[in-house]
Length: 369
Ligand SMILES: Nc1ncnc2c1ncn2[C@@H]1O[C@H](COP(=O)(O)OP(=O)(O)OP(=O)(O)O)[C@@H](O)[C@H]1O
Image (cartoon, rainbow, N blue to C red; front, side, top):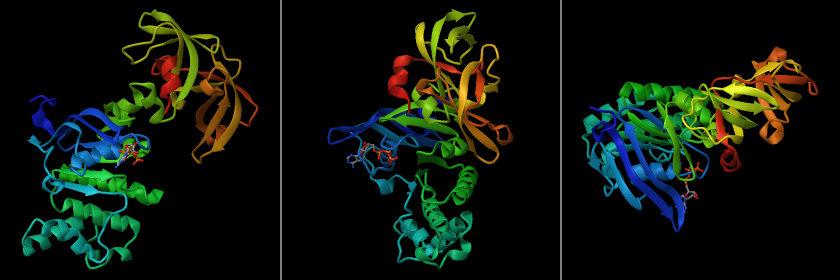
């Protein structure tokens, strides 16, 4: 059966939209979340991620459209009957209950027998490596441990879908990375369909099977992490996910599959992955820092720039360059820390002939994230 049929979708969102007293939080959205996939909703604050998650959970009612979970129409089904596990940023544990009682909560309300509850709670606590903490209260646990309890509580009901809203944003960086790995391991082992909300692009890139990049209540691109990073569909995605260098360029035409550009006064034939290019004339060229090569200032065809600041980052240095051909006059490159240059040194930037993208200038005026 084709992956596009409804049968294959664990969650299907058909034209679902939501406004709050006249403010559009979500434009009509069509989205199929595949069985067992880890899908991340990524976007800036206020783009509608949490609204979409709450619509799937049933905490909000859609203004229009239909929602299916496992082929079942659930648009009118209340949250507790959707068989969904949810983990929030702030844990939301019951402070007066022990860890085991917190985890058992969803089973109690489902009238599961005492013996089965004990078995499933032990299983869920083992999954999150908290089997020795069953009798503690939430206040006796670290933030990471509390979030594991919240995860165990969501998993114990054997949900059809697991929803997580910025679950690790309150944790420090090391713990956050450890929890990301742990969640991904558990999710893969259980083959659990998961929708994960974050505004952190690194978290999205490292964890997801697919990412839906959102802005202003719309999904701007959905794809595997390398699709999103290497072949962004528009300038918003280009600049929101990963670092972007933007150059003012002139598109002269297309010859033999290559776009003929002038950048910084020099000709540059570029093969892009894009199906549609803007009309000839002024355009914006998008290039990742790692696609730019630092050269001598005199190198033929290189775009001239001057080192403004070198930022030490341990294994590498970020070179921030003043560059007249760049939008906003600045670009950034990464070089091995030992090759960092002092401010004021003139350099050249050799641009790649394959890989970058070309956007209309009006897009750059309104679309840069
Ligand atoms: N209950 C509400 N009443 C009124 N407006 C709301 C309500 N909930 C959300 N909104 C608005 O809807 C839009 C989308 O909000 P949402 O919380 O979904 O964004 P988000 O992408 O999750 O943002 P964040 O990352 O800051 O949580 C925002 O403009 C927000 O102010």
